Image 1 (cartoon, rainbow, N blue to C red):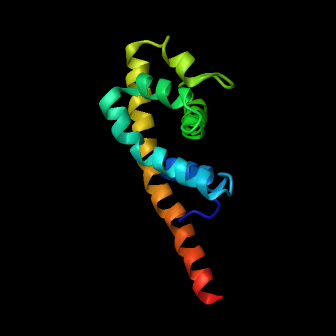
Image 2: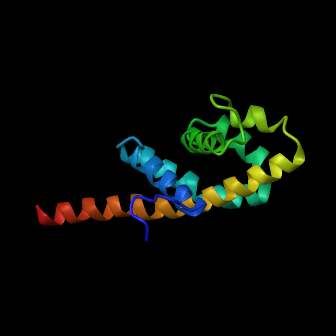
Length: 135
């Protein structure tokens, strides 16, 4: 292996992005639990309703906005929408092929986000239980 060579696969980038997003969530348990619940149902929501409908729903509710912001950031990072633009507002006006590519990308990210919240937020519950037992 070449020293210093940092080539990451798209899967690694998605996983790392999701991990950073979850680690940067507010520390309040209820906010983290809501994020987890909304992230867990995201892949099924996209498959059932399509990306545009899912974005509209997640943008419209205060409880789901943190997940929406995660999706928005990823779409900006991957170049599907312009920097500092809103995902829903931009994708509504994109052609079908761009929307299909964005849907495929967000679905892949949604699966990583679901895995990440199940691991990271569950771990926190286990850690807090362990701390109580150790006291």
